[in-house]
Image (cartoon, rainbow, N blue to C red; front, side, top):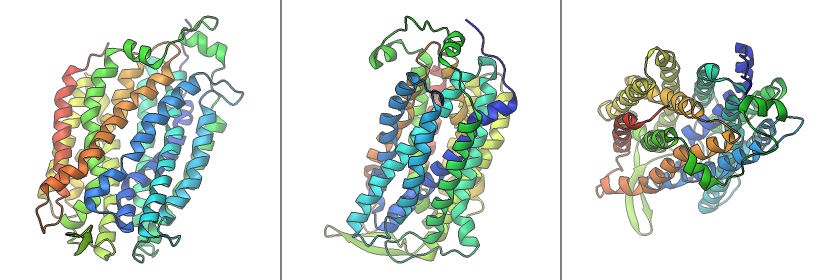
Length: 450
């Protein structure tokens, strides 16, 4: 079996550069979905249910993209055609989603429209995102994979930083940060427009600067017999999956549940915890409850500040990504990172100053850095043969299933903690996220990496 040659830093950079644009879209989605649906009129106890669709789309789409691209050979490449498809679809739906409340529809119609477009957005992001991970597995040798995924992690966090800051920056330069009831502010709408444009430009840069290995050369590098390729179904592949697949998946269960609650509840938690957002009474199905006034300046300013906090998290992640390689053992780096992140989440309960929250989210960024780099490094080093794409697609289930589970029970957990006549304590969900990361840190000891 031939060995994949070393690549220059520029080549490794080009392979992953489109990830920068994809992550801007993902950051805009994760920081603003709860804000958008709250503005449309969603109840806080129902917010987590809107988050079921994104990971559900991911768990369906990514294995399909992995399996399909494993068998795709065109003059444009193996994975690259899917990058082009995902970016084009994302451009369209990113322009539609923030306008869900601007088409004169009723609240329920706007919710349904928003959900449909959200599903399309996450589908397109998944189509565009997964091939970048696969191309590293396809084109980079084991010695350089750590560097390649570090570049991808850096671009991921840099894209997140830009996406998180857009609404704050647009509000700062004078674009309206408030809007009529049921309508998303212009600062958010324009953020999605610009994010969509950058996404397409970045993905197209990778499309036109990277040339994938042709079938014969790929087969030689990966020890595949082209004339007699093994045909197995998904269940057979799962049965033969290396132990790393399952043990890292256990850690992922707690990690991605934690971040699902961060994305869902941070806006409401920060609005009440640090911005003293006003409350209003809302009657649904004859039941009156106290909720935050999402049309208030305080709530919208808090929602912008969440983008700042998520950007601080990205800075913490980039910084910690430099520290992770200094650990002699990956498992130790993984466990310590999750422990620090758990402390960050729990500390938000005790902090009421918006600037002191920077410390909490810097710590949370340490966990995020480990989650982005270490699982895929451990897995791809344990994989050989012609099923790299579908294995990575299946591994995405360890990211999506925890999010679906967390979103499904999130509303119930919050309702159990909400006393009659009191504001839902969304900050408690961030504490729960911290507890999940601490459990994940303990589970790292079970990882079998060979």
